[in-house]
Image 1: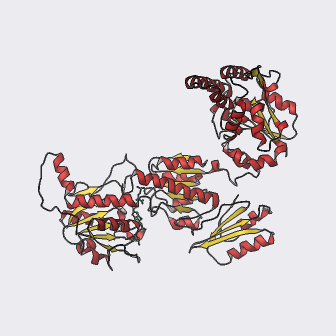
Image 2: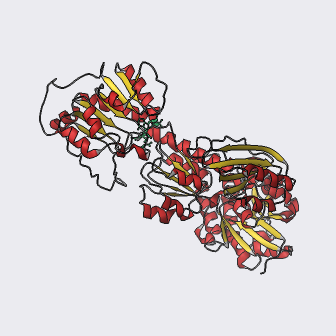
Image 3: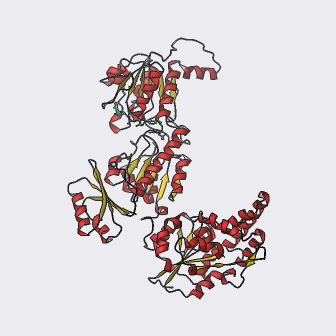
Length: 632
Ligand SMILES: NC(=O)c1ccc[n+]([C@@H]2O[C@H](COP(=O)([O-])OP(=O)(O)OC[C@H]3O[C@@H](n4cnc5c(N)ncnc54)[C@H](O)[C@@H]3O)[C@@H](O)[C@H]2O)c1
Ligand SMILES: O=C(O)[C@H](O)COP(=O)(O)O
């Protein structure tokens, strides 16, 4: 068959237009007794699947199912109500398309008109475009069978019915079952879309001309305007490093193609994997370098499912118009609790005492064991974690000092120090909570250890590279440091299956933990909700709230408008050029939002839906454009 301009869409009902098989739902209504219902439902499902997979003739399957059902006329209104609430999400979303293309949309089902017509009618589908079976009832209203003269009650009824319609133009069949594919097989359709939004049948997908996880995909594939400017199933998200299942569920429900990997990836592995990825989700381990980004042709957004973003080349992301989001507060409390626990353990020499007990040595003594009360705690990096630590530490009676390179509001009774060494020389315990910027490499080295009081407790739960490890080892071995807790390391294993290698292994009174400061279930669950929602909001509306590299814009919901999103290098004249183009094309602007940072400009323009689509090409050509997309 050759393609013509007129496109007719022939749509299956059960598990395509609706999310379920109507007869399964009818069964749950017809059987009051739970045990009977379970058995009947299982049998009906089994028969349906046999028929849908092409392993049982349709007529046989229908007869057997109706026999099991023993449903009544009175069940039909209840069934209609239930099915109305179970229309497939992409059909609900694209109601406007169905309404405005009513002349070319048909429902072709081996189900029953009695419940199909009232449901599809609400989507603008014409009564005489609904082809389905009809029930037969006895005098008590019990469903006894179906009209056997109806073509659709026969095997291969669908191709025969289509043939009888003599439709003008192309015929595109959308369905989840083998009987839908049969129309194409018999040469009565130009294309068969295996619809997989609700069920995936491998032996149906194998025959499909195109697999469609949603109606949006079919409309996009046909260059037709639907509810979404881009089908979500075309957006691939790669989630690395064991991101909490809640996050996976959120992006799956959004309709993205999701690939999950439990560990981090090396640069080479990521360079390969990133090629078709639109969204990347990582934690602290995966390094996103310029080389990775050079290969990330489709990448729109990166989610750091943690606080730190030093593992990502943010400047290169910004230059390419890739947004980066993190979870700035979700694991703050977890880190602070661990730091508090560790400082108490260390000041009581617990790591050594615990180790001795395990080899049978009883070492009961108070020597070199102290309370934390009234001790001086020095916090390096008075950001979110540093501040929270200071609050809890003060509540336990510690005197808190802090040093930060930026001006920070002191909370409670803390003392601000003007230099790092000034602070280090006064405190009994020091805890590092700086961020992982490159320039923080080895900020604690020989000079800083020398400045510390003898017998200090030293803790690093920030980033591994901020401490000079050989110098730390010397300070521990010399007794300068009495107790050490290290959670982060310059080199960390890629996964739990790799060995942890460090010269700090085996040293006295040292707690080594596998970068678990933020690894509590509360924190991970929180992060797994926060980050995907920021990314989804960016993809769907252009909002960049909380982005760490884009100018932050919180945008209103898009209603009755199209949204032009223009990302460009920050240079003069671009906004004027955008507006000139819009004016030249007589485009009615309904709202405009603009924000810049030192690298880029971010301009959002909401416009009236009716406009000359050629303007899109012109916008993309504006000099300095990094990225342009249209949302509706
Ligand atoms: N161990 C873990 O599992 C874990 C968990 C969460 C966060 N972290 C690390 O902790 C870091 C801090 O988190 P946050 O939420 O408090 O970040 P934050 O950005 O709120 O605070 C960092 C503070 O450090 C200051 N700072 C940076 N460099 C400094 C320097 N050289 N000297 C003094 N101050 C400096 C900054 O000005 C800022 O106030 C994160 O960036 C991350 O790397 C580790
Ligand atoms: O930056 C962070 O939040 C921490 O380092 C935790 O990182 P993780 O998610 O890789 O444990």
